[in-house]
Each structure stands twice: as structure tokens, then as C-alpha cells.
Amino acid sequence: MADTIELEIVTPERLVVKDKAEEIQIPGRNGYLGILPGHAPLITELAVGEITYVNAGVSTSLSVAWGFAEVLADKVTIIAEAAERAEDIDVPRAEAARERAQEQLKKAEDAAQFDEAYLAIARADARLAVAKKQ
Ligand code: ATP
Image 1 (spheres, rainbow, N blue to C red):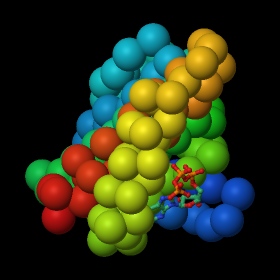
Image 2: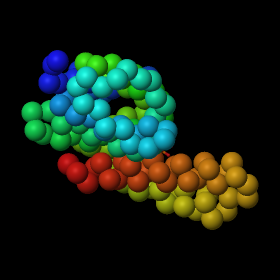
Image 3: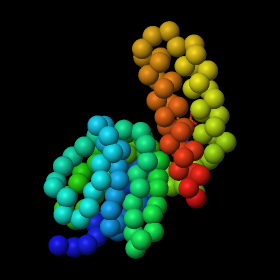
Image 4: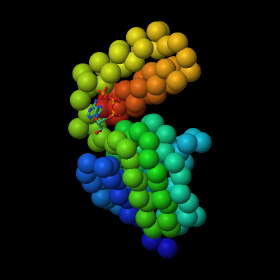
């Protein structure tokens, strides 16, 4: 069995990552999923959070929001609505998005408005956490 996995992360806009990994962590809908070479095949929905992978001992993190991951024994394909490498994250934009969402959260009048604001905060927090790891 190979000791690395191919990793591809794509968004509607671009190919964000094409690399090899010894291990990958992805935010599935039901929590984080750790993937090593030879993992059983699966398809999972993605939540908002961080993707972390290790290649040649070097760890790389990206922020991700929504989408799907297909896991095969030797390849993981992630089709995300949004995914950003640490160096591509605009920190002031994420801070501004977080502040706006906090205001919306205070004014939320129903569950849908609450969810929208809460998830916008989660996206901003994931971006800010990944940007800090640069
Ligand atoms: P904003 O209100 O700042 O647009 P958002 O959370 O609503 O934030 P998304 O809908 O998740 O943004 O993403 C829309 C697009 O903008 C995606 O392509 C995403 O990669 C990009 N994007 C959003 N925020 C940032 C950021 N802080 N830095 C870099 N790219 C970002």
C-alpha cells in the first residue's frame, strides 16, 4: 500500500491544492475525520472548519466551508464551496465579516437568522485561525 494519498481541493473558482499527504484531517458534517492511506472509501458532506494535511512532515492548513469529500484508499478529492490557503486569507475582511455577523446575531429574530449569523462567525473564525498558522 502506498504511504501517501493524493489530495485535490477544488472550488467553483479554482484548483486550490494538488499535493500528496501522509495524513489528512477534514471537517465532516459529524465532526473531524482523520484519513490515512488505505482508508475505507466514503463520501461525506463538509462543514465549516479547517483542512489540515501533512506532506513530508510539513503540516498545511486551509479554511473550508461546505461541500463534499470523496475518500478513496489512495486519493481524497474535496469539492468545496469555499477554501482558502493561509496566505490567501484576507484577515481584515474576515474580521469585518465576523463583526457584521456578531451584530446580526444580536438582532436575530428567528432560527434562520440565528443560523446564518452563527455560520458566518464560524467561517470567519476558521479563516482567522488558519491565517494565524502562517
Ligand atoms: P464575506 O462576508 O467577507 O464575503 P463570507 O463568509 O460570506 O465572507 P463566503 O460566502 O464564505 O464569504 O465566500 C465567498 C468567496 O469569498 C469565496 O470564494 C471565499 O473563498 C472568499 N472569501 C471570503 N472571505 C475571505 C477572506 N477573508 N479571505 C479570502 N477569501 C475570502
